[in-house]
Image 1: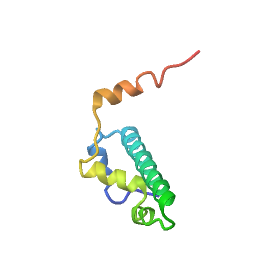
Image 2: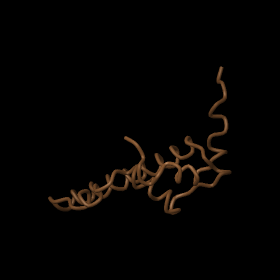
Image 3: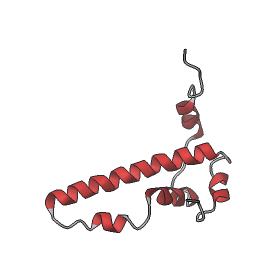
Image 4: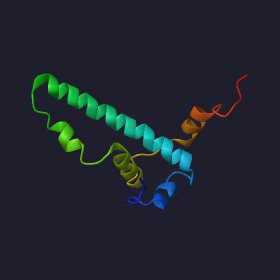
Amino acid sequence: MSVIKPEIDTLLDKTEHNPFLLCSIASKRACDINNMVRGQHLRVTAIQDFDDITTVASGKDPVSIAMQEIEDDTLSFVKEEFDEDIKGANTIVL
């Protein structure tokens, strides 16, 4: 699978040309989207036999939705918070 739309260069421009940052932001958002769709699906199936929410939401995969949100500037990050979250991620633990 490759990123064709939005273009990878556009996405990297919005994430300081850092592929790790781009993947981190997109994957976290994709997980959130997955959880929301799963929660909606469970609520709908609890009250009715037919689930039309999952069908509507399944037109695009969550990663594509996240990448589009990054391109549209509806999804971003706070650099200081991101740096704090990964601080120590590369330290050696003895």
